[in-house]
Image (cartoon, rainbow, N blue to C red; front, top):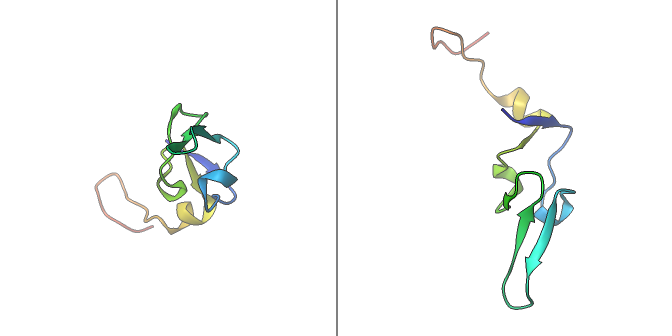
Length: 67
């Protein structure tokens, strides 16, 4: 289950839950919300934009796709 947000940030540096860790030569973005490395905001395991939510197909209990 994901948390629905108005809009996803384009870059990890724009996300309020991410922070840069490491040193000058080797660094990465760390998600403070889920305590994991943030590789890409488009593949976030915790948050989903409303636009992405509305574009997902509706799947019924019997596996059919549609409304």
